[in-house]
Structures are given as structure tokens and as C-alpha cells.
Image (cartoon, rainbow, N blue to C red; front, side, top):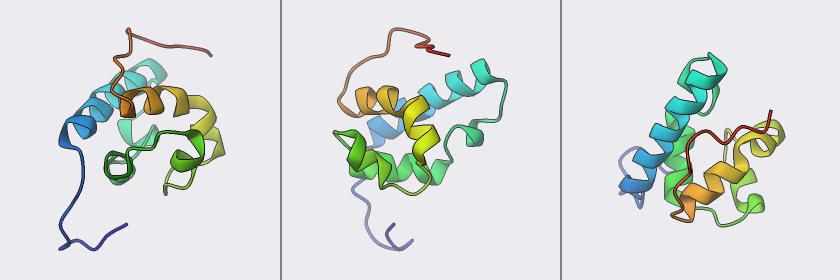
Length: 90
């Protein structure tokens, strides 16, 4: 992560899409949003805009379990794709 005072390369639109997606996931799971991903992790994802799972996996807050559960959706959002509602595979 960068220092607090350093300029950000974060894609604001991507960050907002990730936040909206996270809210839906949290509601489906009956958990607080931070249990899906923290704001800090979403900011890091929006800055990195990963294109593949390996790039997503190295972001702090994205462990193997979250990568397996949420990775496809996050990568789709990073690629600019719209998710068609709830993409449940559980």
C-alpha cells in the first residue's frame, strides 16, 4: 500500500462498483460488509485493477478463501463487466 499522503491512482468508478457489489454480497451472507472485504482492500483492488487471479491474490486482504469465493466477481468488475444480479455458487 502507499502512504496516506501519496497521490492515489485509484479508479473511483471501480471502487464504487466494488463497494456496491460488496454490499450485496454482505446482505446475501448476512454479514457486515467488512467481512467480505475491508474498505482498505477494496481501495487496493481499485488501485491495482487486477486482470488475473494471481494479481488479485497478492493484494493484502485477499486470501485463498476469499479469492476462491469472490475472485471471479471481483475480476469481472475490474474488467468493466456488469454482474447480472446475484452470482451465487454456494
